[in-house]
Image (cartoon, rainbow, N blue to C red; front, side, top):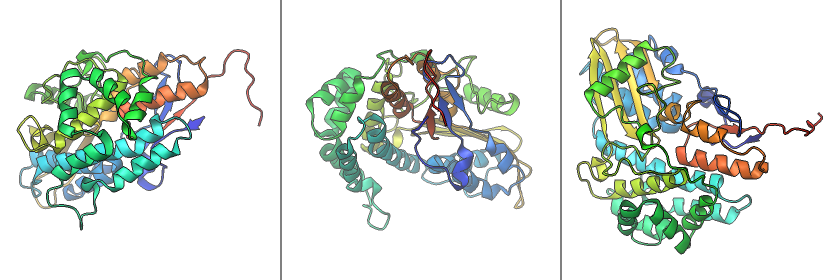
Length: 394
């Protein structure tokens, strides 16, 4: 068994669980999750003002988005009970862009590079240290967006970021392949090598999750969370599994473009560029990502935000609107549960892998899927014992 997860497990992170991957094994055993639905148990009877911080700690890898979504849900359930969250669009923009940068610079070299390629990882880390958007608060620029576009040009793309983005909008994966073959640096060669292990099968655009597109869908989602046992861990939309990420945004002008797992990496780069561009409603900057909330009953609220990994939903019920209000129910539905459903798109592709391939080759294919769909928990790969193969002795 090879541990390929994102981080170690200490403190609250032990609550996060992990994924167990079994290449070539039929679903639902190809992908199993030990994640548990902790939010309802830990938040119940808590003071309302403690819940956003609790959710940020519980889901610490995406803590900023969980804190914000929790605040929005509480505001929908009991307006004025807590100070309403401010500058939501800008906060979501900044924190999503920062998360994209960290995943590209920290996870992609580890997951996608050939074993032993330490130089590439060192180049990626050097690039992160130069990123204006990741600068410490004391030295950060008042407006880091133009500087970050320049950083993208100099350290990742080796051409103007707007040129890269325009070509992606026009040609998608074809552009990504052409660019990765023609440019130097560390990111282009990394993606060029990763293309060789892509299965080449596009995602079904019909499974792209847009449950938050209108109030009817949001209310349907709220009812499922409240009334269907286990929905937060095994969600389905209209009776089928769905997938969510930077390629399923409500404001996407080309929402039904077929993308393979490898091409999803290009979608993340494209969104990072779009977030760094000047604000334009529904197009770029703080106007790109969607978020919202609504009251779903007396002292009940639902909120959703588009964050780095996909669609995040919080639902909350409170016992009163007074100073001593406490939580009656809190439910959280994270992108990992959609993308890593035991019958979902990642599970199906893991089940389709050829377990007879050398383990190192199989693990590279698994790592591409993990880089593309980006779980918020560690994962392990187990290889089935082949016929005639002896088990190792202790």
